[in-house]
Image (cartoon, rainbow over all chains, first blue to last red):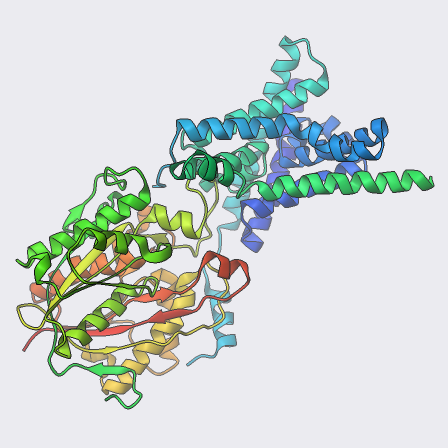
Length: 122
Length: 148
Length: 334
């Protein structure tokens, strides 16, 4: 597969997902929190019904970079936990799988809050 | 005077609308571009580091979150957001933005009750819904596996 | 005295003897830049937080307004102030620094109208001689309280308005030079069921229409009695709705109507429908409008600041946006 085609697929799928988000914003005037929650849950469902992986094979970061990817990671972790340690794994698996992203967000959020102050919009 | 119902109808029909096509195109292009940055990071990491695909994926997320956080800290991300709309909300960088921006906003109220407690006012729902959904789905799988 | 009517006629007419206005840098780039008394270079006013900045701006405006008319703090009988923050801290904390009896007010963005009405009653009734009225708002404090963190990358809907960083203070007295308040119509809270907190102009237009219609009815005046009917912060769309609403009552004001929220920013400044906030009407009133009176360009105006009485929680709970408007008739002394 040529590199151009690979990035075109990433771009098209990633862009399309964001376009769906924008349609939601324009139609319902939803704000960040709700948009993020909706797409996260879409990711959870896609993973639960085993559709996420084929899309990922096709689109790579086009589906994993949108928050959909985070939702899928959480569910994948919970299911793996279930496989490995049973019902307790359902509790621990999701958060374990999402820990890298969550940890990074908390750390960087904390650092940025120390380094910078918010500025007025212009 | 015009009654309430008629007024609400009037407002609905006459209120200025978003420039549909323009916002959609911008969300598509910028959102797609951000995903391509992620893909590039992913490719570079896989090519130069001795790591498996799963680690590469996690590391890519971490890098994207770092970029989103840094751009938020520098005061650039909200400007991108004004133009891109969902194009910069839906990617994981937007999640980082929603964590970092309240943390920065409330640093004047102190470390503990400002930064730390307000950090998740926007993104909290994302984490809660994600964790709850993953547990519920895991539980459903468990129940199904009992009967299968 | 008024037999249940909403309009108060002042037999002794309180005089607006002077005013002062301070705005932030963005407002200072707008079309009214040359009218404002002071344009801040930074909206932080050399303070550590935006709340402290708003407070500093508010205090400075009051001090300079009193100073401009040649009076001292000790000469003032009362200070009537308001702003948009929880517990109106900008006003109270300004009053903390001043040696003036203080009454804190809240009517959202129409607070300046409320202040003028009350000050006029105090003075006309002979209870007080000199009263200062001030209101302020600040984009960054309002944004945090009513909307989102500043650095969050959101897109504002096209009906949104931009909170003005600004403050205005007027000094009223029982005598002196300047335009006087001849009558005032105190508004009722009107709710036409608009639930979109991002379309405040549409939520406030019915309140403004109601108060203006009531004022004209009770005073027996026509809209043409006034040179201008000046609303507070309806913005572009709210103004359009106001004209429509009054037209349905048989009142035509389109040729006389201006709106402070439309005046303060130009279209190039990307503020969607225009300015809003408690400091919008007060800063425009104490710059442009008082200036036009002193130049003899305006003789009679009806000043109608409008306010949307919502909170962040009330909109989350699905409540619609109630609104209020007070009308103050200001005329040249004869």
